[in-house]
Image (cartoon, rainbow over all chains, first blue to last red; front, side):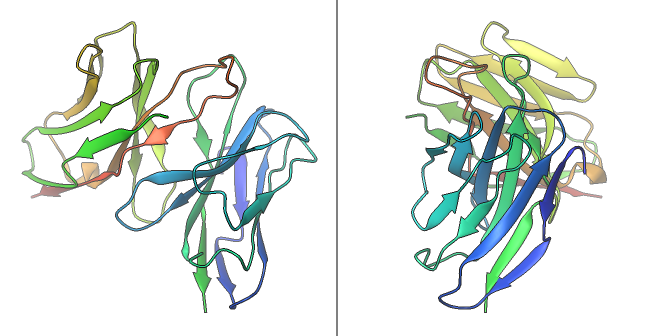
Length: 113
Length: 117
């Protein structure tokens, strides 16, 4: 998937459950991002990370958590504190200093059941 | 922070006609403006981008124009074809790695473009 892989493609969450979305890249990109997309809306930034073991909140970080233990991986956990988690989640990556454009993963569609 | 407004939210044009989508941004420090195309259920794909030292950029049937003074930029698609039907997003950021950290793209709300045969 163009060097950045998201899994699973579809995910169902029960009320009160935490779920983790996977994002892996083999592009040797430094920065990684998580965006949320709701129908009829643009992409909103949840969290991003410039380097390993460091990450910053985006515009809608409440109810989400991330980790960046390896350069290649940036998993997103949707916690039970996120009251409206049903959305399409997109991961992206970017090389430092040499590129201006994101590479996106193919997305994970999360549904609360 | 940056805010990006995109219009229209939906656009329907006849095949072969031109389509124009417009965006405005708020942060005069923004210097990188990409456009993404997203087909249903798929990832956004970069189709063209422009940096603030350039006023216009073309790639075959697609062009982007930038007016830094007015803080707006536009996507122009000529000779539209059915495969151009998709949702288009504009975005803005300070390109590259600024002192504030990694580039963060702020996206517009999207335009659903439909090409009618």
